[in-house]
Picture 1 (cartoon, rainbow over the protein chains, first blue to last red):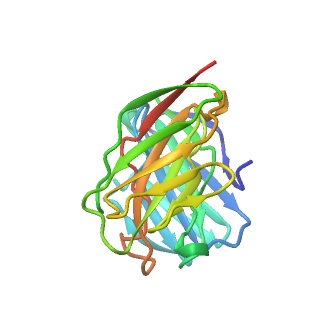
Picture 2: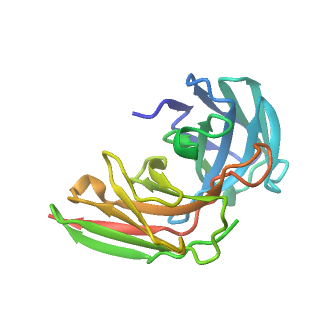
Picture 3: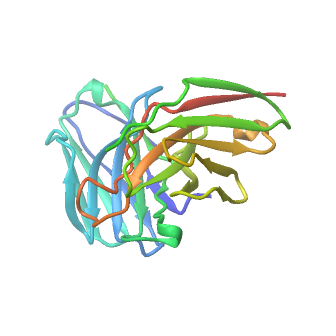
Length: 117
Length: 115
């Protein structure tokens, strides 16, 4: 079972709506991520937070607004989305720095399926 | 980030070993080789990682070529539950906050397991 919890599992929203996706982890990880995955495609990195600060924004449109209110929570605020933004949104977390044998495992949630109508 | 090349798909029979290849000819000295898999309707999950030596864990084994330009993920006895997309990813563990060290997915190999 994943230790990264995402809510809601499914979301349908109109193009004028404002909604949020939420992610929570209690593993003490200080790096958190948002990925977007379209059908039959690999996940694409959107944002990275390190120590609750945004460190990476992979040129994501401003209609996606991430927020990291504390070390356990990560939100993705959605506003004025387009139908092509419909996808699976994956949250992930990891420790910062080297782990055992130099590795650094990233733990993913099960994702939030977003449909924009 | 250095690129990896994997076959688009592979088939296996249940209870038989599976060897999933990955080419990474431009790998750098600081790149670790990671494997993740994604079962249908789930988020990706970590499988194994290594740097130079072969590695074993409860899920799989990772065989790394001596020149590190290729690697093979080995599932010793495939089960139906192993049907997934397997991603081979190079990841440099360096200072966090930069683009290096992040998990960048390639296209992966879709593994089908026949009963």
